[in-house]
Amino acid sequence: MTEPDQSRFAEPDHSRFAAGAAYIDGRYMPVAEAAIPLTDWGYRRSDVTYDVVGVWDGAFFRLDDHIRRFRASMDGLHMKPAESDDEIKAVLHKIVRLSGLRAAYVAMDCLRGVPAPGKPRHPAYARNYIAAFAVPWVSVASPEMCERGLHLMIADTLRIPPESVEPRYKNFHWGDLTRGQFEAMDKGADFAILLDAQGNVTEGAGFNVFSITDGVVATPDRGALDGITRLSMIELCEELGIPCEVRPVPAAELRDADEIFTCTTAGGVMPASRIDGRIMGNDRPGPISMRLRDAFWAKRAEGWHATPVDYEGKD
Ligand code: PLP
Image 1 (spheres, rainbow, N blue to C red):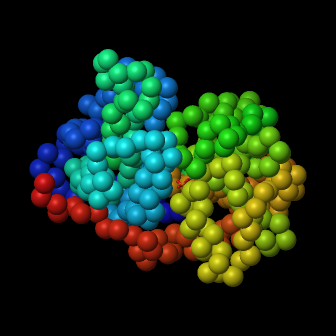
Image 2: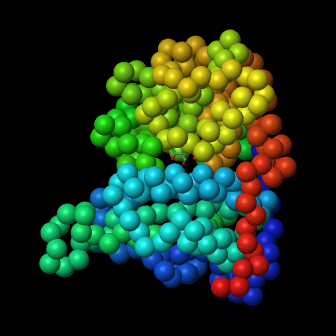
């Protein structure tokens, strides 16, 4: 990955939004002033669905795919905010415009809200609303980790099953992922990968996982978010003629893999060099992972799935 372009477009009130811009339920504000009510079930019950789209070189990556997934998450969780998909897109353009950022992490949340007074205390009676913010680009892994390859471990903590909380609806139920992060820290690893109750790989704290054995790439078919970067990897494999299978990936296959890489909006493609203390290859990112990573960034530089940010908008 190249370094993010931190330059900005000039804005009259640029300094107010230098740290980022936010939108909550119809209003815009500097990100530091954005706050949600303490009583909101979005906070008290983690009753939120969200999505995160990246802006790179002044353009959103796969904006329509993120909006489609966000809407599917909201529908799946019985949430109906006032904004249409086009209105949400306009909000995202505006917060990036206000921030002036050319490389940004752009989050959109739909919060449950609280049932109106006098209504039953059931989520169906809450008014759902949208909050969003754009801040400077962030990456899950540091440049040093990406350079040497991530040190991964398989956690004892299991991923919450889809029968309880569907991970395809991006959500704030991060208790299992957070616990996994502490397991990784205790073992001296960078990141944990969580299994399901059947012993198959799911995902990690904010990223999808790919395992590579004998030249064949594999990624789990359930128990994880259908990542947009993961989708890009599946498409790239097809384009480059690299066999890619979407199916259950047993823990043993990952432990013995020739290569592993993780991927996410906040960082792109992040190859690993160790799993559970075992060194893969020459303790550096493997060749197929690097080929995919390089192809990903080369295509991004060419404008692949890019929607230029409307920096000139007048509203
Ligand atoms: N899995 C989880 C739990 C995530 O939170 C994320 C992104 O934040 C991903 C996977 C990767 O998804 P995407 O590539 O759409 O960013």
